[in-house]
Structures are given as structure tokens and as C-alpha cells.
Image (cartoon, rainbow, N blue to C red; front, top):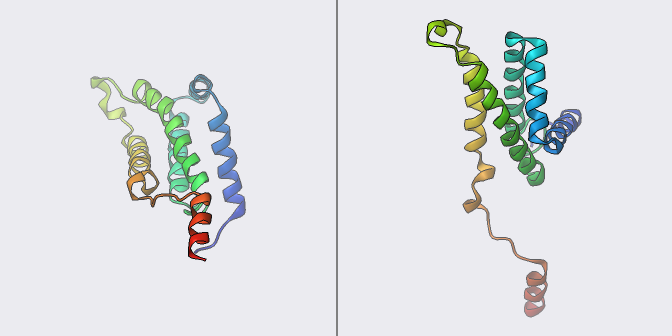
Length: 146
């Protein structure tokens, strides 16, 4: 196992818990207010950074891959935050046909990279998990052997 950065892990958990505990309408309102305050270009930079942080979390740079609960929380939260982001991307970042030169392909590429990484994650492949055996079954089985 590689080097584990505790500060990075703690920051990732705080971010995940904040988004997880926020209702969807507050996330939408927050993102819309940031767009209104910061403007179109700065909001695109923020979204790109959100996508990169999500990729970093899914790439297990913040915490080990073996931490199942944290990884499940990360997947759940990233799916939750991508919903309002997707709505704003479609509403604000698809230009009219006359202004196709304004299309921000890098932003869309970052967003799709995060979604593809999220949806193709090994953590979501439930069929490959081994069946869990209850504690009671293990105790009874060990008593039969002895």
C-alpha cells in the first residue's frame, strides 16, 4: 500500500458529508447562486475543479480502496452532486447553433470523465463480491469442527 495522507482523507470526508447532508434543492440553489455571482467562466472553472476532485476521490487518492463504507459514501455523494450539475451544464453550457465556437469541450470532457469513472467503478460491481457469512453461522460452524 502507498503513502496515506490523513489530511487529504479528512478533507474528502468533510466534503462528502456536507454534500450528503444537503437536500437537492439546496445544492441546486447553491450552484445557481455561484453561477450568478461568479459568472459563466469562473463557474466553468469551479465545475472543472469539482470534477477533478471527484476523480481524485474515486481514484483513491484520499483514502484506501479497502475502506468500503467511505467508498460507498463517495459514490453516493458524487451521483447526488452530478444531478444538479448535469442540469446546469445542459441549461448554461450548451450554446445556440450560431455560437458553437463558445462550446467548452474541456468542461464537458471533465464531466464525462467523472461520470464514466463513477459508473464503471469496481465498487459498483455487486456480483463480484463474495457472499457475507453471518457471525452466528461462523460460530456454529467452528463449534461443529471442534
